Structure formats: structure tokens, C-alpha cells
Amino acid sequence: MFMPYVLSPMSIKIVNKIEAVEYIKSGKTVVFPTETSYGLGCDATNQSAVDNIFKIKGRRNDKPLLVVVPTVEMAKEYLEWNELLEKLSLKYWPGAVTVVGKFKRFKDLKIELASGVVGSDGTVAVRVTNADIPKYLSEELGRPVVATSANLADVGDVYDPANIIKMYEGREYQPDVIIDNGILAQNPPTTIVSVVSGELKVLRQGVVIVD
View 1 (cartoon, one colour):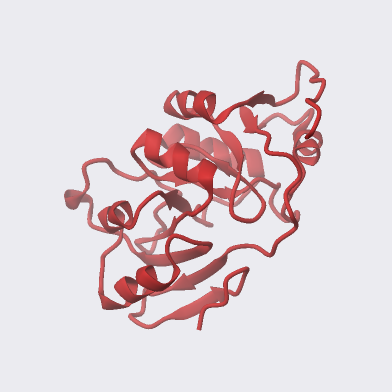
View 2 (cartoon, helix red, strand yellow):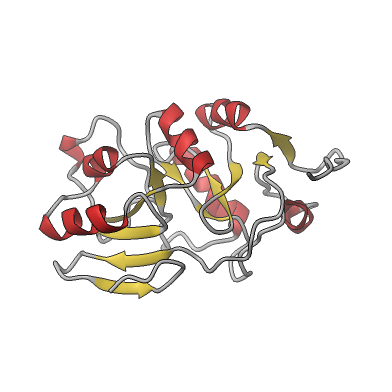
């Protein structure tokens, strides 16, 4: 069991997952535990919220943000599906494997993903998560949730909520709230693969070995 933090007026507010959903719906940014480290997210269809993620992290806008979804069915709404994706989904989803694929054409979508989630090359990075909290957030929102790492750009992954609060304290741009799930085990990052070319390419070999 962990003790709650004594927050200064400038600190990130600690909330539970139910409260976090309401913050996301209102366009706010949320830090939450993922399969590996803490992630930073928002509604992937909210352009203003996505823009804020880039500002908070100090991340270049030409580096798209990945999203998590709760089911393969939702992933199919945003990815141009093919036989290779079907095989990967059966073997690795839900799980800590993110797939970069071709984004489904705008006309096929009920709700558009924000710029910065969809790359300039027409691709999107999607993971069907098996982590309870991001899965819950996306389920309740009914849309993909951004799930980039919660650290500042060029800083390593963070596993301790206290370090996240300290990292952002006093900065102009901060996450709005955090779901504090205690100190996480220091696992490797999630694995990232690409199917854009029609063949499997491992971009980052992480906690799940993909071959």
C-alpha cells in the first residue's frame, strides 16, 4: 500500500479511473499505468488535447502518437485490415504490441482521429491493450485513447508517480491529472511493429518478442 502525496497548488491532481474518463471527455490529459511504464494520454479524436500532449512532452509534431483500444473490433475501424494484421491480432492482441498500419480512409470513419495521431504518411499506430486502466478508459470513451510515454521527450520511461509529478512541477505545460497505481515494475517498453509495406517489420523489440 502506498501513501497519498501532499500536493502543492502546481502539482498534478490525482484521480481514480472513473474521474479520469470525465477529464478525458472534457479534453484534458491524463497520466495512467500501461502494460509497462506510465503513459500520457487523451481523447485521440480531440485535436486540442492531442496538441497539448506534444506541448507537455516537448515532442516534435512530426513524431505521431500511438493509441490504445480495448478490442480488435475497434482497431479494425481505424486500420486498413489485411491477412497479416489478422494473424498478428490473433497471436499478440490484446497485449503489449503496437502495430503501425495504414489509416482507414476518412470517409469510412464515424469520428476522425486528430492530426498528430495520424502520420503525414497516412499511417496510425494502434495497440489492443491488455492493461486494465487504459482498456477501461478507451471502453468508457468509446474511442481510441492516446498512450504515449509519460516522460518528457528524450527522457527515459517513468515507473514512479512521484517522479512524474516532480518532472513536470513548475513547467508551463503539465498533464492535468494522474491515476496513481503505485510504483510499477521496470519492464521493457512495448514492442512496435509495422505492416505498412505488406510485410512484418519490427521497429522496436520490447517486452513481447515478435518474430
